[in-house]
Length: 430
Image (cartoon, rainbow, N blue to C red; front, side):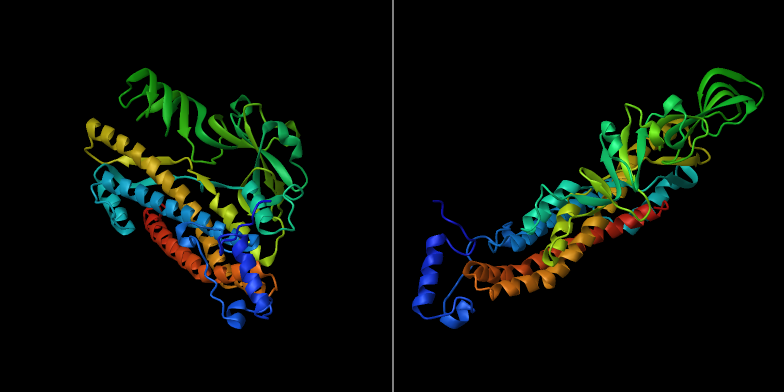
């Protein structure tokens, strides 16, 4: 028969020896053994700061420490990601690593004035974030013994990704949304990419002219593709901001609601909850994961586990600007090359900033749980009459302040870099 292991003892034999000493001493196991019997019970093994979640041997308590470890790691990673993107932007405009958000913002203003007249306009939608529904359900089953993972599911306030073949499961308080190439390139929804319209002779084109460009003075350039400073005949392709409406041909990704027709075979599909509703979700949830009902001490733990799994996709960016007077072809090429690097870093900042909101909020809730509902549950276990649970709870009480302190420190570091990113994103309306 295998021996049961407990974080506060080397093996079950030590626990039996302790229980025997209590009985021989005429002590009540339901009372505080350390006070009543004068026993020195020391919590052994690594603690929370060493990455150990098995502090108490009680699932509902140790699940908290596991969630705190996951969330702390997510915040450290996110903070580093934000800082690396800020440093990359800083380096691209001649600033040192570690520059503040205000310094980067001001540096960008000076750099852009060298190449463009006025402001650089950046149009984009918020990053799309997805949390793991499976993580929430698994955390609920791990923390609360009354939850059977095979019989419960989490709900989602937002939208759930679907396999295209699973469209029939999108019903009731949800509607099917498809993303991909629009049927016949006609996007009855929102378009991300190029919107291409036919134009007749004499028309102006603010985007890319494909066809004949007639310059000032009457010179016609056939087979032209690019920005036409005169009039255009043929097609005019306009770069859409993410989520824009295209009343012509959408050459890009179209987001549309097909009704009963269903999505095209090559499109991705998701089930989107209607306003104020939530839907059952078996995979990724774009929005807020609402885990199954659990005990009060497990609520923040389950939310933290789901939040630690969140992943946000950088949005599509659409740039618009006008060249400053005297900027030659070489300088224009240099700026375009810089702009591509800036595009990647700016988009990643938007995504990391969105993730930081989710995990920082979950961390604050978890700290509150450590000082509230969870601490209350741990205190109750101390007087439960269960020797192992009682001593394990005592070990947990010693580690709760360490976990809360670590979460606060990581949250502060994350928020500092998130605030710096706000300075940069805010300069462009983000």
